[in-house]
Image (cartoon, rainbow, N blue to C red; front, side):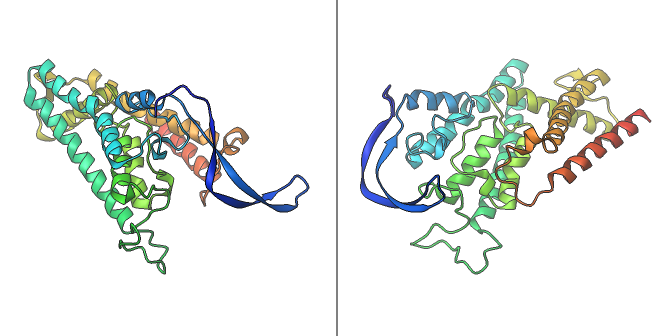
Length: 301
């Protein structure tokens, strides 16, 4: 959809009866016969959202909204756009360093991690929720099967798991399903991708330099294991290079854990939690702060 129209009010073909609670606390039945439909320049913003790995959506439901992502074809185009620039930059790396094979090696490592994530996420979601043992979650002509909570029926398990892996492999915030509704193993995949720094292909540019940091660390560790001076593309990896690589990895962990620990024990943070589950946030933050204090003492020693 691409227009500059305001909201449009339309008549429902099937009016709905809903229960409404008034200011006095009394419940009454109300018939809803109209719906307000948002309009706007969705198409032009949508491709920017995906191709630039910017994330966010024109509508609150993001790429699960039919105006942003109406068909499986549009779903494929969005996923392709998310990976397009970030994936091509590995070829650029090979050309810039004079070693196309190295660029393809980096791409292959990213592709392997991506395929592992998709496989685990799909397997877990297709097997359904293990707690709902008395519910039929098998795929059939009448249902998609698996864990369909938080997913669009027009995409199903496969496209939802694939989109979740793609968007978290990059730094794109686009989603076509609710990651919070994934099974533990299925939700683990986007969480690991995010905690890695979203470097599996990654964002436009940010994924490439992010994975190069891991390459430098891998070369350094491999050099120590075989007893040779670590080299990367013909240049020696020295202590300063490793220190900067470790700093780039640890600084984000330090910032995220520190501010998260503060947020989950202060009212301004806990007030925004709408789905707390069973997590003991205060105990978690206390353990986090103790862990950082212990690490500080070990570093000082």
